Length: 74
Image (cartoon, rainbow, N blue to C red):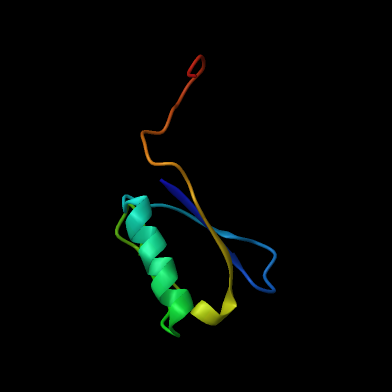
């Protein structure tokens, strides 16, 4: 699933593809926002993204499911 993270005072957003479930990502965001721990996520290639909780602007969690590729997919 695609995850987009907006960071305060930064024009570009962080975009990553993750195999984590939407509920896992949501709980990680909730934990980061409620405490002062950074938001830590892992992408499909095993790379970790760490964002300090104090600079989070927004986190957009895409729908779970297979990615559609090609023409005529609906």
